[in-house]
Image 1 (spheres, one colour):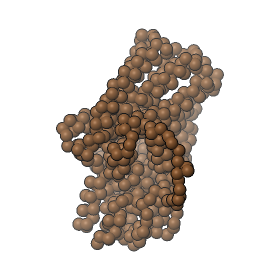
Image 2 (cartoon, one colour):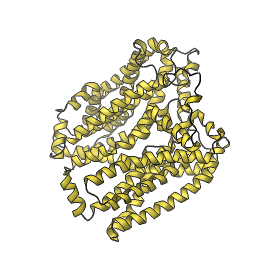
Image 3 (cartoon, one colour):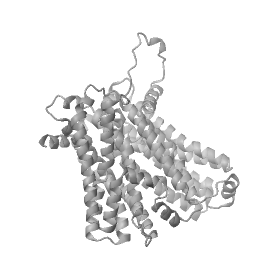
Image 4 (spheres, helix red, strand yellow):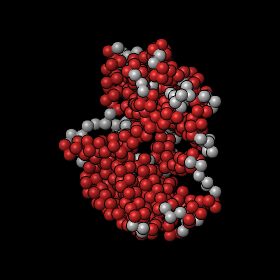
Length: 554
C-alpha cells in the first residue's frame, strides 16, 4: 500500500503543469483562470443543470422524474469510455515511465492501480463540475433531502470508476492474449471510430425529435423503448442503482452501487496482478512501425523555402498523429453536424426554396449569419487548439525550435499560417456551400470569408502567445499534450468572451444602427484588423522572447 501511495503521488505530479515562478505570469494565469470559469465552466455547467431540471419538471408525476439525470449520466459514462480507453492504454502500456518501473520491486497490481488512480483523478477533475450541475438541476426540481444529496454527490464522484475499469480490464486482456494492439496509433484509431459512431447515434436519436413534442419524446425515451436506453441498462447496471438511490433515497440500492464499483476495482486489481507485468514486458513505446532506412535519400530531397518546409513538417505531424488529426483537424470540420441537429430539433424547413426565401425575405437573417460566421470561426480556431498548443506539441523536441538554422520568427509564422489556413478553410468551405445553396450575394460571401480569415488570425496569434508563456512540454502521449494543457482551456475561454463581445458590436451595428451586411462587415473587419496588428506585434516581440528564454522562465 505504501508503494501504491508513492506511485500515485509521482503520477499525479507528472500530469500537472509546472507552476510559473515569476509573479507577472502567476497574475496572468489567475486572471485567465477566473475568466475561464465565467466564460466556459459556468455556462456549460448551468446549461447542463437547466437541461436536467427541465427534463425533471417535464416528467413530474409520470414515474420517470429521474430519467433526465439518468440520461445525462449515461452520456458522461459513454464519453468516459471513449476518451478513457485512449488514456488508460497509454498509461498502462505506452508511457515512458514503464521501462523504469518494471525493474523496481513493485507488484503488477500496485503499478496498474496507481496509474488507474492517477487517470481517475484527472478524469474526475474534468467532469465532476458537469456531474454536480446535473445533480443540482435534479435536486432543485425534485426537492431532494440530505440523504439523497449525499447519495448523489458520492455517486457522482465515483461515476468514472466503472467505465474506466472496463477499459483497463479489457485492455489488459487484449494485450495479454492477442497481438491486435502493438502501438499507440491502433488504440487511437479505435477510439476515433467509437467516437464517430457515438456522435452518429446521438445525431440520429436527437434528430428523431422532429415533428414531436419534446415532453412526449422525453417520456417515450424514459420508458426505455429505444435500443440506446436498453444498451445503457445492460452496459452500466450500476447507473440504475445510483439513480434509484438518489430518486427514492433507497439505501440498499446505494450499497449495491458501491459494491458494484468495488467489484470492478477488485477484478481489475486481480487481472493486473496476474497479467499486467507479463503483458507489458518488452512492449515498444513507438507510435508506429519504423521504416527501413534507405542508403541514399539525397536523390529524393528537394530544396524548399525554410518557412514552407517548416509548415510541411508541422502539417505532416498533424496528419500522421491520430490524436492531433482528430482533435486539431477533424474537430474543425464536424461543427455543421450540431447545426444540423439543432435545425432538426427546431423543425426548420431546409429546402432550397425555403432557405433562399429566408435569406432574401428576412431582414435579420443575413445579420445573424454574419454574426454566426465570425463567432464560429473564433470559437473553432480556439477549440482546435492549433495555436494554443503550437509549441506544446513539440514536447521534448522543443529545443529543436531554438537551434535549427531557421529564425524563430519564421517558425512562429509558419505554425500560425498553418493554423489560420486550416481554421479558415473549415469555415469558409461551408460558407461557400451554404452561399451557393441559399443564393447568398457574392459580396456577402466575400465579406464572410474576409471576416473568417481575420478572426482566425486573431485567435491563432492570441493562443500562440499564451502557449509561448508556459508550454506543456512534459507528456507521455499526444492526448495529454492537449487535454492537460491549461493554455487550450484559457484560449477557449477568451475566445468565447471575444466572440460574445464582437457579436454584440455586430448586432448593434446591424440591428440598432441599420448599417446592413456590407457596412457592418467593414467595421468588424477594421476592428479585427486592429486586433491582429496588435497581437502580431506582441507575438514578434514578447512571444519570441518567451520562446528563446523559456529555460530561464521555468
